[in-house]
Image 1 (cartoon, rainbow, N blue to C red):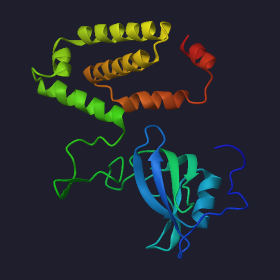
Image 2: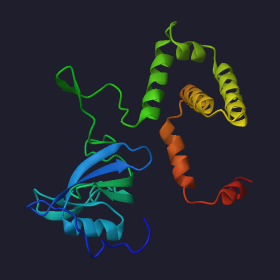
Image 3: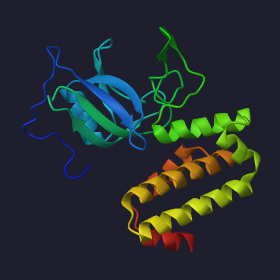
Length: 227
C-alpha cells in the first residue's frame, strides 16, 4: 500500500445494520484464505493506519487486534473491496499460524462424502502446494505405475537431469517464439522443479519466503549481497 495510511474521506462502504462488514484475509504469498472476521469503521480505520489487521469482536463488543494474545499478527499488504462494496479482502503477511487451533488457516475442515472432516493433508494453498503434496505422496508410496515415484526411485541425479533437460526445452521454445510450446515447457519445468523440491524435502513455502525477503529489493543489491 502507498500514500497516507487512512481511509478516503468518501468511504462509501456498505456496512450492515449493525455497522459491520465481513473481511476475508488471504496469505499474500499464495492466496490461501486464512480467516473471516468482521470490521466496523473503527476497526477498518485502525487496520489501515497501523497496517495490522484489527476486527470488531461481536461477543466482547470491542476492537481487537488479530494476534494481540498469541503474537501471530497479520501485516497488511493490500486491501480490496468487492463490486457491491459490502465485503473486504485483505492480503496479509501472517506472523505465524492464523487459527487459534494452531493451523495455518481457520478453514482446515472439508466436506467429504457428506461429513465434515479434517483431511490427512494440511495443504491449504493453491495448485503449487497441491502438486507438491502429490509429489510427496507418490514418493512415499513408491508405486510402479507412477512417473514421479519411478523418478524419485532413480535418485536425485535423475531428477536433476530432468530439470536441466526441461530448462533447455524452455530456452528453445522461447528462442523459436513458440508461445504455446513455451507455456507447455515452463509447466514441465515447474513440475520437475517441484519433484526436485520434494526429493530435497523443501516445501514451496520456503521458496515463497525467499521471494518475500527479496520483494521490493533491487536485483543489483541482491547480487552484491551474494558476492
